[in-house]
Amino acid sequence: MTSQTQGRHGPKGIEARGVVKTYVTGTSRIEVLRGLDLDVRPGEMVAIVGASGVGKSSLLHVLGGLDACDGGAIRLGETELHAMTDEALVRFRNRYVGFVFQFHHLLPEFTALENVEMPLRIAGTPAGERRARAGALLERVGLSGRVTHLPSALSGGEQQRVAIARALVARPALLLADEPTGNLDERTAADLHQLIRDMHAEHGLTSLIATHNPVLAAACDRVLRLEGGLLTPA
Image (cartoon, rainbow, N blue to C red):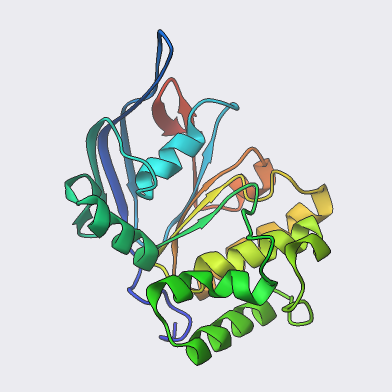
């Protein structure tokens, strides 16, 4: 694999030990992750399945540093997330982790190209470089003719392709995808499944994908089930 296609920092594994995540609403206390352990090898593509509301999104959020866990330890490569300051965690997340969500969260007032550029703009990448990298990724995901379109002018599948390009433009080592095809029709979802698999291989990623879709799950290297706050082989 060439340096052009491999993740900028090389693939990273995921190691989680005893992870706890609790939510408090009013007088209720809900423990969604209960001492969870996880190992994902560098370069591996792993699916997380489970019922709605079981905590798949919460798991991805704490693994990617979007949310703090309430107990346990998380290591991405050689970096221990639980030991980082908030500022250091933001820098790490922006450099090493790409996120794709069920609802794409594109900025409605920006074009497809500008949306994909955004992580590089935040990182201070020169304008010429970020436009070139964003344009190349949009071409790769089949949207070379849609770069100047606003999200409102794109179909659901096209919007999710923009979101995938945005997740990869900073050349992360890790891809965390939360129901990336859950809001799409069957044919569009199948096309996105193939794109995600292709991008995983081309960019030398380590990928963790939460999904209800059995076809996408079956295409991964392993499938784990989240139930009762713990992970088991599916």
